[in-house]
Amino acid sequence: MGQGSSGLRRLAHEIARFGAVGALGTVVNFGVSNLLWHLTSLQAVRANVIATIVAICVNYLGFRYFTYRDRDKSARTKELSLFLAFSVVGLVIENGVLYAAIYGFGWDSSLQRNIFKVVGIGLGTLFRFWSYRTWVFRALPAPEGVADAGFFLGGPEAEAEGGTAAEGRAPRPKAKQWVS
Image 1 (cartoon, one colour):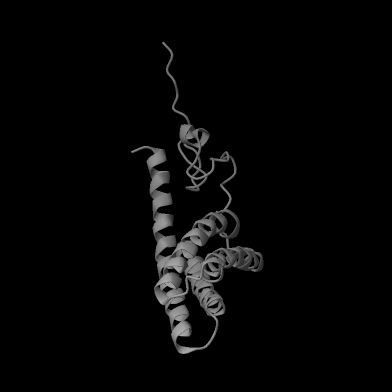
Image 2 (tube, rainbow, N blue to C red):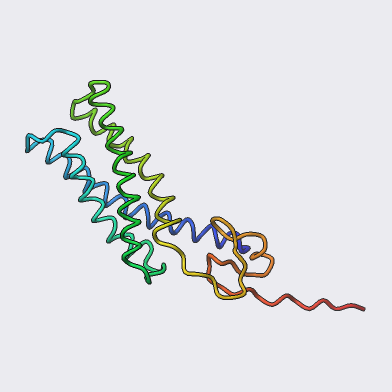
């Protein structure tokens, strides 16, 4: 398999780890929101905001120490600030969908809340995956001499030289050409 397939494997591995942490966060989110919906008199969206905040805390720990444990750790304050900022945007996406369903359309049964919670979490997750990997848990810089390898997997420049910045490998020397 070529260098591109190695990059695809890395991305698939990252998505799987992100998904595992996200699944745990989703279970926490649903558990807390449903407990609050059924055991308290909090309004549905307020209870869901609390559940989302609890899940954000669980997710940060999972992303920092499991999904992105190999990423740059030199600026934790900046990392946490960005994580919280992007998480708030995800919270607004998730709870905006729930708010629209309940207050815009009157869909407020337990089943309807959970259905629109799934939709909101799905949309928020797409945004979070992109923002966390792009801005929060940044890849360590490539060793000197390795060209910028492209958006996800490494570009043709890196593949032609035998390594990718995403893999953190230095390029292989080019083979000598024998001229007769």
